[in-house]
Length: 194
Image 1 (cartoon, rainbow, N blue to C red):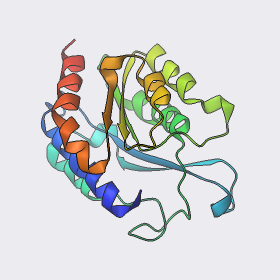
Image 2: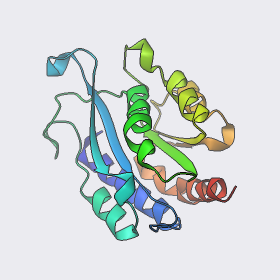
Image 3: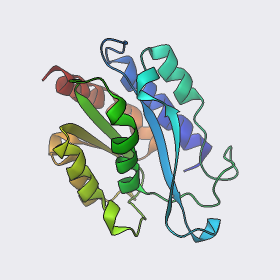
Image 4: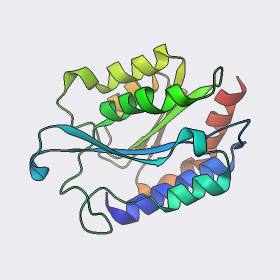
């Protein structure tokens, strides 16, 4: 992924969030970056994440933008310092958000999970299969929106995450993310207003 693409992702998310009614008594935004460790980090299928913005603190555009501006790539080199070869552990990422972030949300609040991925899950842990974790989210009345970036995205995995064609967004690469801004913000606002 690299620093350049993390920066492109942050810029895209800032544009989407700008179109949402972010406030303490309205929409709150949390940001979790997820990856995983494998043989290149002398680990075996281990989840890794950074909490960029806790949901409870994402109450202003300024706070969310500051968190997005501070995102660092998980990989070593090119701005990152943590992992030798960050893997994509999408199911574990969903599970983490369900366990650690959404329980802290306000009672009765509409819950939306937006997942961005530029590949497909590398996890070998059957307990965290992407479709199983997305189903778990929906069983908790969480709407899942899936954003695929680039040609290496596994479309069936996006479909499994979203569970609905209206909730799948795909870009041909990081440079094309801006084309999705209006669509993703409009669908997010539509879900909020339902």
